[in-house]
Image (tube, rainbow over all chains, first blue to last red; front, top):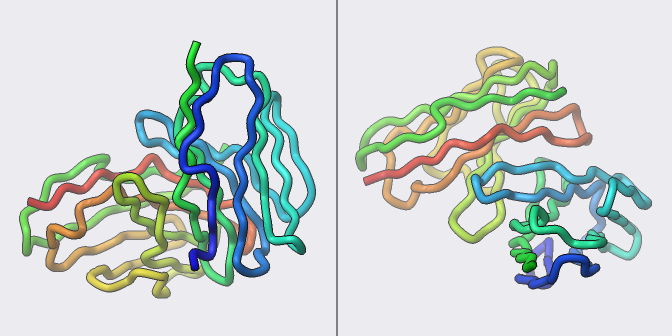
Length: 107
Length: 111
């Protein structure tokens, strides 16, 4: 199977809602990065984690290398949170990306 | 702030033609990478380099060559462009086993 499995494929939220995205890994990863890709295609790095949990404003991410998963939590969703979110895990070389979660936030 | 730039930002090429995509970083990073993204998908690693004058194959290297003439510059070369190479190409740089910093991408259309 895919080395990086990302769920859900798509997510619809109303403004103010909270929700989460998850990536499961088929094997032990060294680190994980989370990105938001905006409507212009630009990749915006949200988090880099080698272990543990990080928070940045309304976003929070956790990486558990032993249990082989990472999560991204969006709190109080805003319209500008719309976009496609990717997790990417570091293997021996480069990053392996998930297929992404398309997030749509509605007023 | 990390800085990775790519040129051109978009390009239209003909089938069978030669295409060169360029990447420049001012991060003083040893590692540089080339990825491609197909519509509706994540990125996949084509080539990478950890030192000037040396390149390594990634997960999907067929049909691509890479060149690292200096620490700052990393090029991706399509000797004979094909329709299937239409995609968005991203360059990135990093220290070994640390966060990767991505450029803005190059949209390549092969006709």
